[in-house]
Length: 119
Image (cartoon, rainbow, N blue to C red; front, side, top):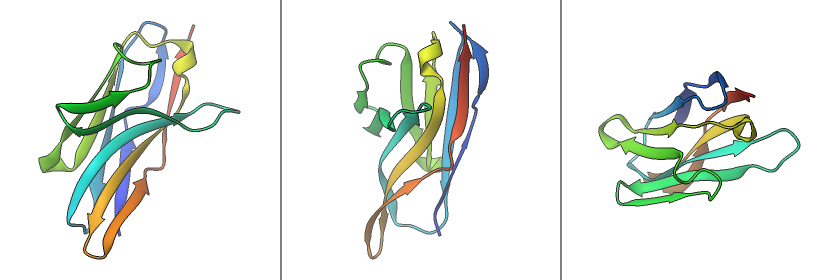
């Protein structure tokens, strides 16, 4: 069974920074893409950033230039460095991984970590 465990959320003032971490554990062959999504109250879940490799990343327009996604394959981990946070970044942030198993590829989600940005 695969688990994605996030950490690093919290409360921060506007303009501040936070770093989210997500580690995958369990039995699997490899991890393809990893990503961070977020969901604000009353809104749909949206893609924040995704990464296949350090040279292959994608960002939502709303966070480009402020957030940086990275991964550490040896630790099956993905990170999201968030700077210059704004109140509109307040949401539950979810880690997502496209994981390759012997039987095929499956999508996995973490349980979410709350980020609150106060004005």
